[in-house]
Length: 462
Ligand SMILES: O=C(O)CC[C@@H](O)C(=O)O
Ligand SMILES: [Zn+2]
Picture (cartoon, rainbow, N blue to C red):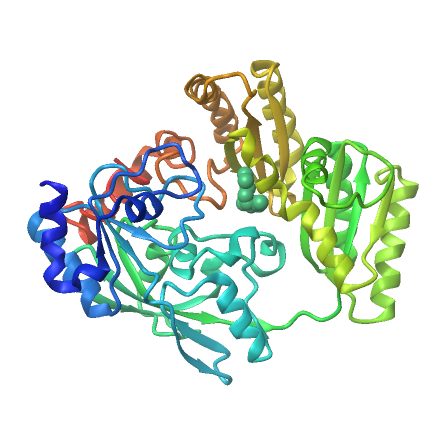
């Protein structure tokens, strides 16, 4: 079907203003942050109601039009890329908070609500939405649900999945399902809510979500520590976790540090170290602060920490967080090839040593930047493109090495995508994390909810 024919199909339903075909809109709504595939959607649709979403899906089924969901488009796996004449369904206009109840401590939102908007709304109610990451200012809750987004507070609060108590979804057949209805307890068989979380829009569209909120953390403090080696990072994690409930434990290498410093973030202390840890906790009393200092001193005595700094104010806390949160944007100009891998925490040291051995051997001429949510066993391994190497050649060399990296992931029973989703970039490697039998069941589930294969085709599964 031609681009015009696809657009003409939806125009009577949405009108010209919410059925966009201009080059700018197609370019903007057809990509995420991966920028590997050139955007080429036929049309961008902007529904405002659940009924309109249902009608879009019904029309798409009748005319075999592929639909791609679009949120804040901050994804890193090309899960929301429309590169093959699809109709993009963007949720920008379904961006309202619909209900809040202080007894339930839950808020019901439309999918286009931006993560930060939800965080601020929770704060206004004296509560806290704890799923947080650097792109919270643009990512939308619908997209977070689609990828089961994680971020920097998972060690204490878990992933998006842990906060969703209800979903309304429009399936690939156009049916509207109410999943779990906000209940805390509900033992009535299969929980389709959890199937939709992390399904990357391949089963249907989330059109409403009920989200639990937590109490606001009090008196947060951040420590940034310089650490001489990778195994020491794990010793530090263990030492702090034995004494303190951490709200974050992140790590980054000296290379990552160099990039953020060049990006204008102030250096935390003069001593240089191969690795840095950032940890956060609630300093609920003076005793809690003393306890953290005692663990810090123990780590120094053991030779696990070479230097460190603890935040003394909210401003300093925010500044220290920038050292970690701005890594991704500071390396973005180097066209990074991204890996988002995880194993159980106990296996991290051996796993990182093996993977690092492979990438150092295979990429002697590339810069390798390790950072991530080490307290969750989740590492972001970014390979930076040398300035003079053409992008295609760089990606093809990286793709070859990926197989070896993912073989190690498989040996360690790890994940090839801990929090960024599979989309198109990780689809060829799914078998390293999921067995053939599991993938068979996944296909059967997809066929049940989306029999005509119109929902985000080519993502997650072929
Ligand atoms: O850019 C990356 O590889 C990771 C992005 C994000 O998940 C982060 O933790 O900063
Ligand atoms: Zn991350």
